[in-house]
Image (cartoon, rainbow, N blue to C red; front, side):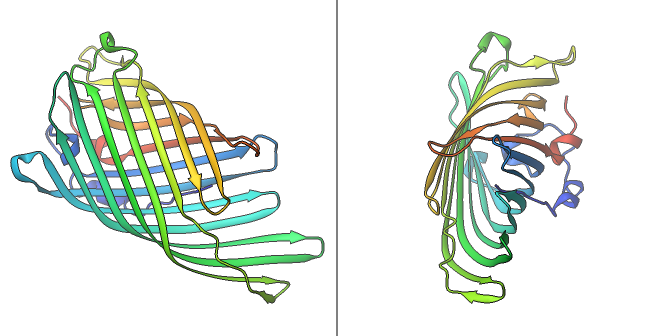
Length: 285
């Protein structure tokens, strides 16, 4: 139930690489849009997001890079007549690492950021209206590992590449204002603590040109999410397609369908599209 809006689009034009370099030493500007719908017809929601990662500092031996992480997320939803919207922004540090290679290429990354979120909701019950506002401050941590075949070839199917990703959001400060028909209510802030583990397996590259510069990678995806505020666990299993180019597989466009299941609640179908603006304009050879 999150939607993200990105304000960093202009950064893509600031340093588009003119030569083929390593993707895990380069800047990323991601913009995306997601939509989800409850399968019982009780409501739906959407989100827009933008994420910037700039890594101008190199570590010893050129096997690591360090820099800035920033993102913005906007969410809107209406579930069971409850209308919700939020805007969240985060700012922190980012790091990428090239791990020792064997038969596979291995890359890792991590982000650590301060996050601020402003949210509000409203619900009509009978002749009355409930309204709330909340302000949260959190620590956000993410980490990922990419393992891929050096050749990116169909002979490596159905395990051409794998991604393992972890996200953790830990609130440390929250305040809430709530009222019923204008009369204040003394309610505790909603706990937005959240843990997410995601797995992706790229099945086989589908090359789109004779030079094998562009290819489409279908994948299967699985996820586990735990939300402390409910509390509840969500399980996801879906599919995705990613358009990539170049020797290192610069990801340009990714699309996915990822239904989420819980033990007691209805299923939600999640659709998402993500565009990497830097890769879109990058030259490849």
